[in-house]
Image 1 (cartoon, rainbow, N blue to C red):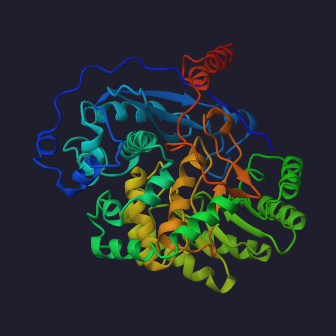
Image 2 (spheres, rainbow, N blue to C red; image 1 turned 180 degrees about the vertical axis):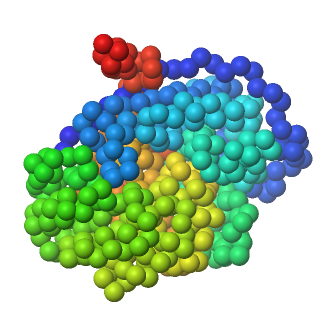
Image 3 (cartoon, one colour; image 1 turned 45 degrees about the horizontal axis):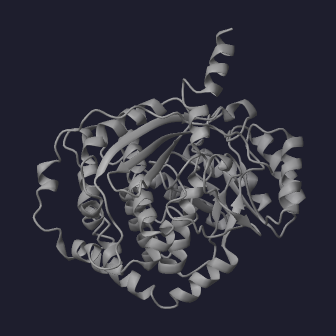
Length: 486
């Protein structure tokens, strides 16, 4: 299937001068042995952050029904696109995004600007040398946390900023983010994580032990990933807004392209779901894997009743059957669906590591879905990967949107090489939309993610795409908005 709709984003003017760095962070005397290691031989980290810009980039995917589901019927795939620059002579920029669905992206942009003073005029080596402290500073702003804390718009903005920092760090080191993480000493990895609120489940010592055990066989697993890639599944065939003919056409093409795992959107109308699931199951046959996704549509009893009617199609999981905040509701659905052989998958709208902790404690999910932009970037995702490993729950990341595939491939490849060491019941979502707008788009071969080789977090967008799709002044939106007025 060809890529869907591609956007472009214009560039914002430079931000006004920021206030001085927060005293509690900037005045720390020595930044521990971690900083000494980073400043020592081998580290390429350099430059003081001199500029942070953020742009509202939107793609009118709703025009074709792309991305549509039972709760989000007309999404315009969008992103708050952050670019960080330093005073280093190399001119390398860090690019970060957070994913949105159109309206509201401007609110995330405001939140990024509100966080900017925590980033500007900081030395990059000081940030990554005390990454836990920097993460804590961003998420614990004494005023901004009131409209969080660590959730919602502020956390989405935090993710965009931190994604840009990770992109910048990896580019300076000349490595893709997954390789930066794989090569990192376990103690340095642990130092990037904020363990506050999760030490009843995962301590620093627990995390270090898991990562040290992950060193065994790591080189072999890295070679395996480079040769074979990480297994993926496709959601591109069965958006809820697609006609039956479109569904059949895309499903046939996906089978021809070698896909063996398929996800279908459900939840709006039971008879419609039965018909569409029957079409897909008939096309892919009994041996291939089918998943279902209700996108938070149902109440708890409704979810159990609805899935009992769809169980005959043998889904591996039902994703987001109810409110993402209802931990005990997910646990009840999970227990009720065990006799039907259907697992629960959730996580794409989990606010933070605390919600994941409780989902794991409550045995409320069988498949854990991290998101590279909903959580606080790599830092918070590391904590969730480690908790999933401790509970032996497979991680199957959420992807799609604008740049989510580009981002999350790094996290799941690192997870296999350094944490889980397993591919059992594990796969990463793939959606074939908008990749042409990125300088380093994902590469899928044999229905698997091939590890990126370009330095960075794969988040850098093509400038012409950004300018063209910036909202509301980009060429695409000027035409669409003018047409709507007429």
